[in-house]
Image (cartoon, rainbow, N blue to C red; front, top):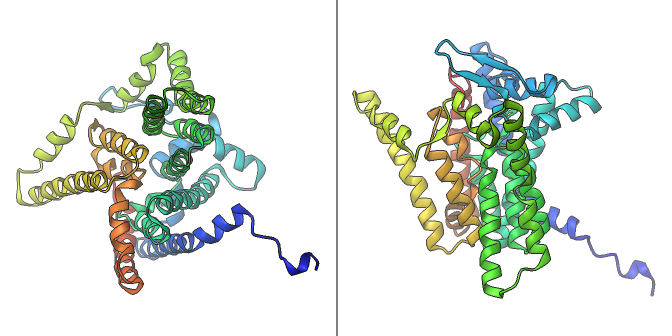
Length: 382
């Protein structure tokens, strides 16, 4: 008997890739549909899809950081100052690296990073959902994340895809008890967006619960908890030093953009102001329904006994998205990383016949692609 009689067993990485392959194919197909609809819409409107994806709104700010570094400001007529210090550095760092080692421009490097990160995010979402609810639910969770109305942002040179990828893999590592990996991914997530605090909260509270149960602190748990906040803390402290604002320096930068945590007062007032006419009232009802849906999905996750790290992470993401002042048109985009909200729907879809779930997801994918193209052709940033 020789080695040919017993072919080598697949590597863990190869097995994981084959297990996730259907989810990744579904994700790529949905995103390709969104880009195709955007291209057709752009041709009809006389606008470049490439520009819409890589060189508008936040994409421009990230590209400028990648090209010229920090220190650029814009002073608006009302006296407020928009500083590029508001944008966390990991995405522009990656843009600069890719542009340096390839023929891509910084803007195109941003697109390349975002597209690769979106696949990494899809794989992470699948891993989490598969671990908790099984493979079919994992595929459905990825599909649902892809067909979100604001899913087109996943294909833009924005940081949502990169952050979601790092957060998802940090949570997966945490669910598997791999504390050091969880802390490392959380630290990188903290270098990507301010909402990295949600990942840190999930790790710290889970660590505290485990220490209380076991009445001891394992070194790997402590190391993961220590690593988790380093990325965000390092950048915030650097901004405070650069601006001379100390620990509150980054908050001052965000205040210049009109951002701040007010427990949802500004958002509630924004919704209330919609009820001054029939068109506005309809929009107000839609906003209230959207908030109610988010809360219902979170409560359903609690009732389904989602793991504590997922509930902690999602709760903080939702709270920061809905209870912060700022540009209210961005609220749906800020909720993109809250993928555990989709798990109750994924479980329900996984219980249907494949043909029925495919019909539901296919219909929603078409609607999402059309809405995404409409959204990007609007005047305001997503």
